[in-house]
Length: 322
Image (cartoon, rainbow, N blue to C red; front, side, top):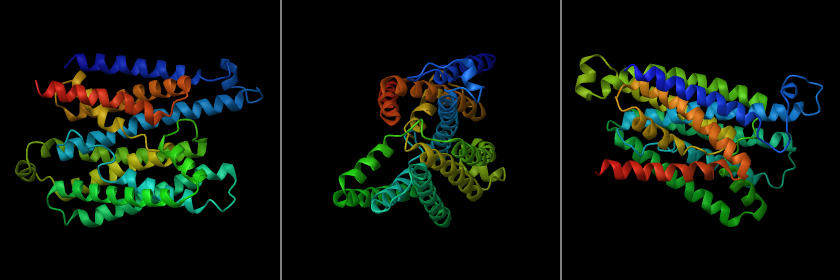
């Protein structure tokens, strides 16, 4: 137990170091004064890098938390932020916007905002549907099945649209699906922060009931844990956390499956409060590292997260079968 504060402190230090390294990665070489002096010729570039580092910090907190909640609630090691279909429906609404706005002249500075708005609307629509039908699904597995069906339907519609649209619209949509760590502006960062804070509040309310729920539904009911309320908190928290990141940064949610596994590997005791804290700080560190790699290699961040995530999951599967 005494090792946990040491572990947390070590990862926090690493996260801070990578945060500042991320600020110094890019084509232009910046000085410390460039981040503080508004009259500096590199002040705008410094602002972009601050937004990039902050966006990765917020994504590192939100995505692993969403995956952690869903894995603990469904007792499914492969559950992630896309298990409810949030990502798929967000992508569908973004596809609708990109494909059907191709004949409309939209200023570049509004383009990302409209894409984010489309993604948020799609997420809200699905979250409302999940909340509407959640009381009818007594078995938790039905929610996963519902999310899978919604994802399949959204994917089919997107494929249908891709078959008929012009190549430029298809290219724009594909670029969005790769994920972006450098497109969020300060206003979007502030909105993202507010949405994530709300999601974390619902997460905080879910942890204690999840501890009781882990011992069985009968045990949880004997301690007065409201299963319906817990289900709603999980849906709202995971939806807000995953949807907000998807809206502003694209679908870079694969680490929502990987980071909770990685946390269990480095800290085995199954204490949910510890696991949640570890998921957030490790998520921040990993996302900063991915952002640095993305800037150095010019590879989309979604590709980097996938290359990292698949070996970790394979390692977990091999380890669990020994």
